[in-house]
Structures are given as structure tokens and as C-alpha cells.
Image (cartoon, rainbow, N blue to C red; front, side):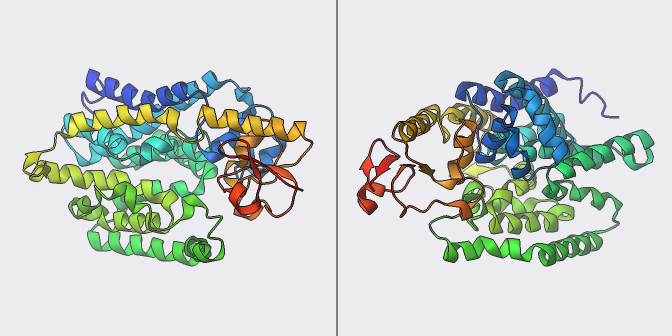
Length: 398
């Protein structure tokens, strides 16, 4: 069905390289990354009382404790799902490019030319597992001719898609282009894409509007992953290639871009299709900078290596964890409550400290209620005259 595509050493080598790079980063880091990842890590370490607070399906939160706080087992499972994720990207690339080398370049470019997909592959949470399955379903759906006639494959992909959706409902945005295979022309594709976007807007308009209203109502407690427009920073170098995206997928890509500009947490979804445009431009005219052709292959490999090296330095680092542990000890020794920025609340929970400042910006602490020990990015020394113990630890007066 795929010829010799899966038989070449290039495929196997790139598959393992791309899937293993985030795992190496986490191994060097020695702990999980991502605010919600620490919530699931706490659950994996036996703090099952938080299962109902994680906005994830009960069957998944019942599986997580089986990790038994074993970091190496976690990395092994994440590596397996990364393989599925990268396999899905290979299949997506195969749909758009006939040459194997171009498919390989597509996969490397998606992961290496922006940090967005790579960062998603670091998260130990329901979204990570859902996306791995969703990209696999997308790849199968786009690549295998007449796949819907094969009952076994149809049942299998349907089950995988259902699991993906139950883990993270927004994964339907990844799998949506499969419906394009059933449409006859670009006019139908545009109509279906716009209809889907309109329905989504009607259902989620309050959720979308919050990205903008929070700038006014809670400027000091913004939810970073829902801030609008700033997602443009991560794709500014590839956004111009959208005009080279195949016409069949252009309306869908524009919709993904709009969603990503409303909420930065979704901006990564448009990356694969912008990369398709980039590679189409490279194939037609080449990519040049000041008259010199850009060598995409080594650039993508260096990008992945650079991102891997960057992982241990992502916040919170092991040094930050040590500072949080110091804050916990200080609060216990002085018999004082410990207040923290809500964005790191789940990190404190994973360290065994119960804090109510964790689930959302609505759980931000009241800094005017004394006394307490604080771990915060705020300058409480200047604002309230608190004693600074370290960079982010303060003891505030009575």
C-alpha cells in the first residue's frame, strides 16, 4: 500500500529521532513539564483525591495512578505515543508529497522549525495522548486510499478517534480534514469549513470572548495560554507561506490560524499546514534569505537538537523546584500559610503541599491578608514591605 516507504532506514531513523528527542529533553530535565503535567504527575504519585479536579475523563484519571510515580515508565509510555504522533505526521506528509525525502523533510520541519509541536510532545496530560492519536487518525484518513471500504481499518480508526475525543474534545480540529475526502470540489470544502467554524463560534463564543475580556477584567492574573494574538510570535517566520498551502486545505488552515490568534494554546494546530506551504514554496522556487538558499534539512535537525537542549531550562527548572520546596519548609517551620501564584499551584501539589491556589486565575491568592509565606513573581518587598528570602520567596508581616 505504501510501497517501500516504511522499509527504508531513513524512515525508521527519522521516526525514532523525532519521537525520542522530547524524551531526551525530559530525561535531562528530570521532571515533567507544563503546568497541568504536574497535576497528572501528582495523580501518578498517588494523590488520587485530585482526580475529579483535572477536567479529564474518569477512565484516564483511573489509569494514571498505575504509573506509580515511576518517571522512567512515564518516559517509556510517552515515547510510544510520540512514535504514534510522528507516524501520523509521516502519513500526513505522504498525502501531500510523493517523494520520500520530501515527506521526511516535512516531519522534521513541523517539529524543528517552530517550538510549538515539540512543546506539545513534552506534556504529560490528556491533551498529549489525545493529539498523538488524533494525528495518527488524520494520517490514516488522508493517506490510505479507499480506507473507508476496509471494515477492520474503519473500526480501528473509529475507536482511536473516539478515544482521542474522550481525552480532549478539541482533537476534532485535528481530525476534521478527513471529511474533505468525501467532498467533490473546493466550493463544498469552503462551505463545510465555514459552516463548522460558524457552529463552533455559536457554541463557544463566550469561551473565545474571554481571551479578550480577561485583558480588562483580570490584567494581573491572565491565563497565559488563552491570551490572544501573541501566538503570532511563534509562527511569524512561516505565516507568509500560507498562500502556498494547497487550495483544498487553505480555508481550514485560515480557520485554524484564526482560532490560534484568539487563543494561543491552539496556535500549534496550523503549523503542519503552514509547513506544507513552506515546502511547496521551496519546491517551486526555493527558500532564500538575502540571496542565499536556506538549507532546510540541516536547519530542521539543528532546530530539534536545540529544542532538546532547551528543555532542562524551561520553567520550572530543578532550581525552581528546590526554591518551592524551601518555601514549603519555611512555611511549616514558622507555622504560616503558604501562598503561591496560581499558575504554579499544581507544582506545589506534586511536591505534597496542599494549596487552593491552583485551578484557575479565580484561585489567585489575596496578598493583603497577612501573615504568610509567599512564593510569587510579584515584588511583595516593594508592595507590602515583606522580607525577601530568595528570588521568589517572601515572609510577609502581621
